Image (cartoon, rainbow, N blue to C red):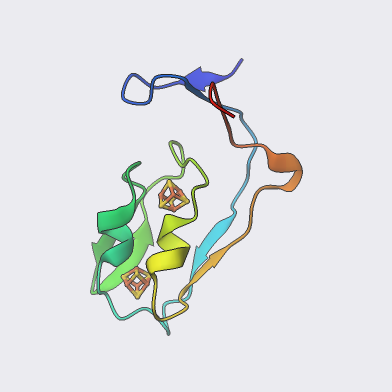
Length: 89
Ligand code: SF4
Ligand code: SF4
């Protein structure tokens, strides 16, 4: 059964997307751009490094990957395009 969240009307998440974002701690400089850009609140900073708090609400927008100037975020869309579905395509 797909999950929905009140703060994202028109979007539903499909289970089983797996781990599709990884952070390379050696490259991360702790700038927090990923934290600021992520509307789903997936990131946090701990000990001057980005951490994934939870990918539960991730919309697979790849904005975090795009803003990371250090190339510290390894992003790959979940196999089969699972993760979330929206009403607008
Ligand atoms: S944007 Fe990149 S370098 Fe900056 S905190 Fe996030 S992962 Fe680290
Ligand atoms: S892909 Fe988008 S929603 Fe998912 S963690 Fe990155 S910025 Fe957040």
